[in-house]
Each structure stands twice: as C-alpha cells, then as structure tokens.
Image (cartoon, rainbow, N blue to C red):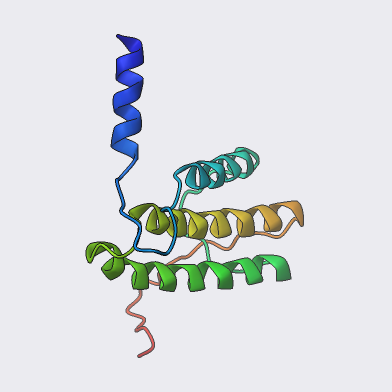
Length: 130
C-alpha cells in the first residue's frame, strides 16, 4: 500500500508536457535541487519577521538584481505555459530560482555581517512617490 501512495505523489508532481521539438521537457529534479540549496542556507539565517529591503553587501546587491530579472522572466513565461508551449516545470524552476537568489542575498549579508533593513511604512500620512 505504501508503494502505491508514493507512486501517486510522483504523478501529482509531474505535469505531462509534450515537447515541441525543443527538448524533452524540464525535469522536476532541477527544482528539487534548488529547494535543497534554499533549505541549507535558510537553516543558517535568522527567521524573517517582516519584509526586508534589498540592501547590504555588493554580492547581495547583485543577487537582488538577478532576482528581479528572474521575476520578470517568470511573468513572461506564464502565458507560454497557459498556451501549452512551455513546460510548467520550467516556470516552477524560474519561480524557485528567484527564491534562491533572495535567500542567497540574505545569506551573503549574513556571512558578511551586514544588517538586514526591515521595511517600515511611515503611518504619518507620508505619500509615496509617483
């Protein structure tokens, strides 16, 4: 019985994608590797209690820029997945990659003893820039 349950979990995680001459699809194991790396770094980091601003060491700044580019790519992939021309696992990977960049930036700051600046909204009627 336990073996049957494991097989069902694998089926749910794998979305069938028919390659269109570009390749054989994007294997979920790539996503799992990123998640493992994220978990390893997260174990060392202090728990987040609020949003943090993308500040700190130069390496962290580069990682935050990479995360921004990754999010932009993810938004471009969504319609491709919806149209069936892109493997949904590729979109999941790009999503996890942006999470990896965020965690890596925090990890760099942690290793270099850079303080994380928490976002604080000024509630005294301050207006945001337009």
